[in-house]
Image (tube, rainbow, N blue to C red):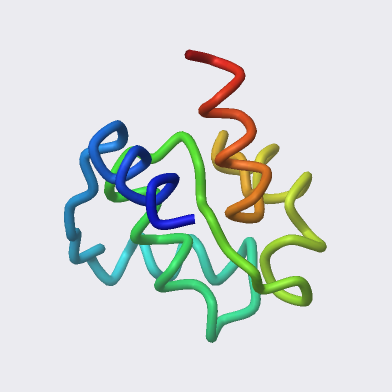
Length: 87
């Protein structure tokens, strides 16, 4: 598992973002307000994927989030499978 994480870390180039208030408010129209900063961060980062284990607030409405933002919401396992497949 550690080797998978190291591989992922070198491949995706993570960085931190601070979404602005307008982006957080926009995200609150899409997901539960408590999770809006997470989706807003993904929007601010122009992310293709949002990786989470939050079934209730992010994975369950994944299709809705994808439709509204273009961001694919997946579990870490599915993301790793996607990365391996695309290599």
